[in-house]
Image 1 (cartoon, rainbow, N blue to C red):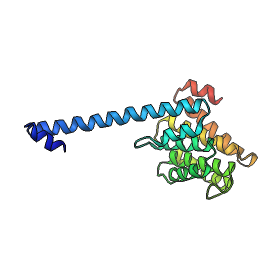
Image 2: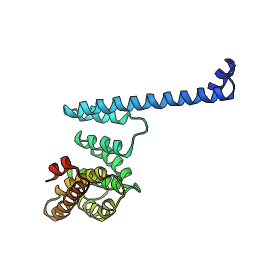
Image 3: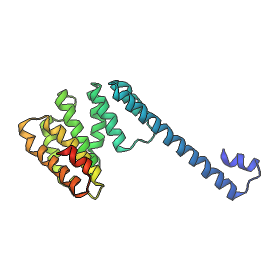
Image 4: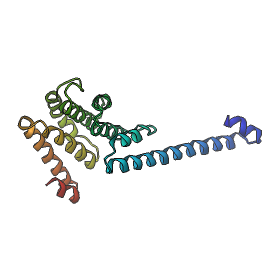
Length: 193
């Protein structure tokens, strides 16, 4: 369609290429603006406790990142939609990225904890899987903020399981604190202490 339009206007091959690139850039920019708008809309709904509407806004994102999908699933949990959330968390738990995998497992633990049967395994089993992937998360080359974020998510989920997993949760929080100290992230350090 663009090539035909460009030919009608008498544009040469280079001009056609430039026109096509501008069109793609405009679409990318429109998509980024659209995603930003939906993200802000979801945040607004989340702030006032309208979790179903917030999750609906997140569902409309174009090409969502893993963390966008995690946020969408977490909103579904808050809305009481455990089975839908479980499906999204299962996809995240299958990721090759250890941080995304840990976040997905933490979400599955939450689903299994709040509504037994909504996730394929028991909450306790997800707690064990989180502990087994934690070493990979701590040795990742990712930014400290990302590792701290996922360690906090996992620790919060593990704390739901009580004494049996309290040591693992404490260890993850300790690792998050030490990462924040090493990276000189004083604000995160204060939050974690």
